[in-house]
Every structure is written in structure tokens, then in C-alpha cells.
Amino acid sequence: MKRLAFIFFNYFSVTVFLFACSSMRTHNINIAEIGTYPQPLVEPLPLKVGAYYREHFCTFATVQQIPMPNTDITLVEKIMLGEANIALFDYILSHTFEKVTPVQDLSGNFRDAKDIDIIIEPTVSEYSYSVSPGICLVRIIYAITLYTPDGGRLGPWLIEGNGSVPTGISSKTETTLVTELTQMAMRQAAAKFMTGFCDQPKIKELFYNQSNQ
Image (cartoon, rainbow, N blue to C red):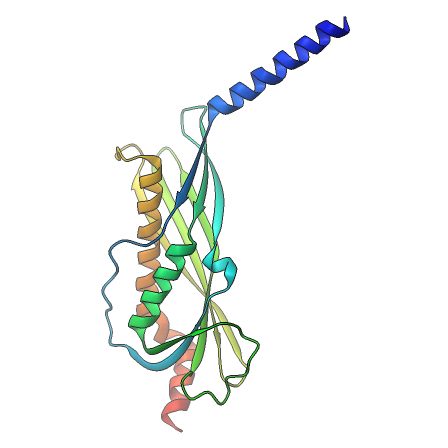
């Protein structure tokens, strides 16, 4: 009887394992850049900024589980954005500001630094990839935090980018589709940063203070 129970238990375990494997598809997707960059719409601003990227930003990865409509298949996507994050903000900052200086940590006081007016730190606040009967959608939100020479901390300023395509019209592989939708969302976020930076109240105040020095 014990032998029969043992055989049944092992058969059941193998069956469950095979079923799980047959209904789930796993991909690793590494996104290293954002494709065609948006053209700057304004001249570089007369600000000297420090760019501070934390390790989590540089190595950002997320696991997304997406049930596919009208199937028993669940996609498990490990999406790695670290390289693309760096490429994106290196481009944004260098085309938005007069001078950009990498900053390794925030522990030092840059109050007297003549080559930095403000430090900018981007982080990934949210990333999601979803598939519905009508649309495939990637949504990414960057949180931008600003540090001023007087020790102030401004933000976060949230910038959302979206990339979408109607479900079923693309013949591209899942990896290619996720990559292109993510790049689309990142380019939209880049355009919003470039056109919206000067609209932030604290940035207007910074420009005002500089013009009166």
C-alpha cells in the first residue's frame, strides 16, 4: 500500500510539473538602449547639473507575469532595463543642460562647487507590461529628485511614458514586441522631461535666484 501511494505521489508531482511547464513561457529580455532618440525641442539650459545614478537604477530588472487572453499560457518576463536607463538619461541630461558632471555619491556638500548648480537623480518608480484583448501596453514612470547646493531636496517629479499596440496586429516575437514598446515608453518620458523641466515651480525659483545674483 505504501509503495502504491509512493508511486501515485510521484506520478502526480511529475504531472503537475509538466502541466505548469507547458502553460508558462519564460523569457529574459535585456534592453540596452531606446532606439531612435527624440530630437531636443529647446536649446540646452544654462545649468550645470550633476547626474547621480544609484546602483538599483543601473541594474533595474522586473519580473512580469502576463496571462495571455483566450489561452492557458502565462508569460513570465524578466525585463532588464539598467543599460537602457543609463543610455536614456545620459542622452536627456546632455541635451537639456549646458554641462553634466557624474556624481558618485550624495554624502559630500556641493554648496561651494562652481561646476554644479543642481544634482539630478532619476529612479524607476514603476514598470508594467500588460496584455488585454484589445491592447499590449508598457507603462514606465520615472521619479526625478533634485538636490540643491543649500541642502534642499526637491521632488519627486513623476514622468510617465507609455508604449502600446493593438493586440493581434503584430507578428513580432514577444521579446521584440516588449523591447519596442518599452523603448517607445522611454522616448515619451524623455520628451516630457525635455519640454517640462522648466515648468517645475522649484526650477523656476532656481532660475530666478540665479538671475538676481
